[in-house]
Image (tube, rainbow, N blue to C red; front, top):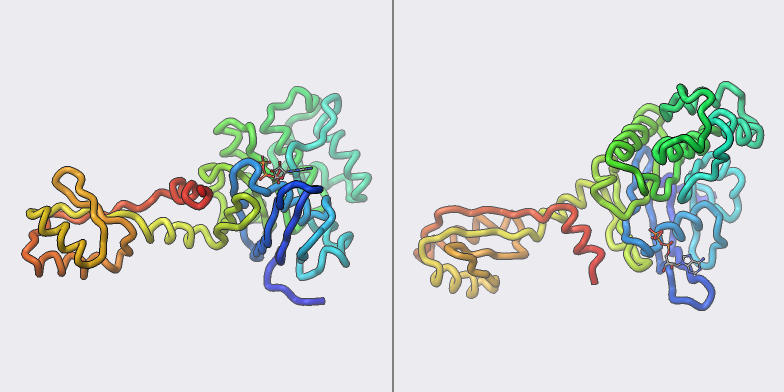
Length: 305
Ligand SMILES: Nc1ncnc2c1ncn2[C@@H]1O[C@H](COP(=O)(O)OP(=O)(O)OP(=O)(O)O)[C@@H](O)[C@H]1O
């Protein structure tokens, strides 16, 4: 058995449905122990397909999946015993209570009765008593789906768009629940979403997928640094033509906006030498302002084109 430093790792995952276009191309996910991994991408990017392959719900065509250092093909049962999953909406019986729904699964999983109360408590549904699931809000149903995925005490939880359709309050509650599961119960979480804003406050790591290829993978702070990198810088100066000429000589394109010049693609560390050069050419500087791309813009840039 090959030891892996990742809780979940895919290597060269490639998939095609029938004779259609390639859906996934060489996806190498790397989910670290202890992390909450946000798997981001617009509709149709290939998130569900990837997660289904990772869970063995779709047959692997090309590439491999390793979870807890074990190969999925060879250790499927052993792996799945330690993985909880919620793919799309949970399958629940509306005419039964939360407890009764979980009782059905508890028998299948062969876990103690006490576990039902534990997981209901964890997801904040312990007080729902005789209320039927058909009377639950969407947020409550999603949390019950997570309770079901937690019954057998997994150490990895895979959630496909669990915040889909939730109102802002439901999203906040879901975020708090997942944070608690990660921090207090040490559960590694992979959560997919098509909205960065929904998971930005939750995740430690991000993978951005678009048209079946991984566009970015790393920590949330690395994504933030990337947003920092090629933001724009605005120079307010006393001699616009001279400043524009100086930028041009340095091979930097500047755009005039009113009394200011805006320059793109600059790194923060370039600014002092750029300013010194302007001054050496007789340009007086009133102000320098950096404009970082916000994460949403960066995300849109990553998934455009
Ligand atoms: N069973 C299938 N047969 C054929 N094509 C499929 C099938 N399932 C998904 N696809 C196609 O594969 C591509 C990726 O779909 P997938 O559901 O993995 O994306 P996604 O990122 O999860 O999107 P969404 O957020 O809309 O669920 C899409 O073009 C989709 O139409």
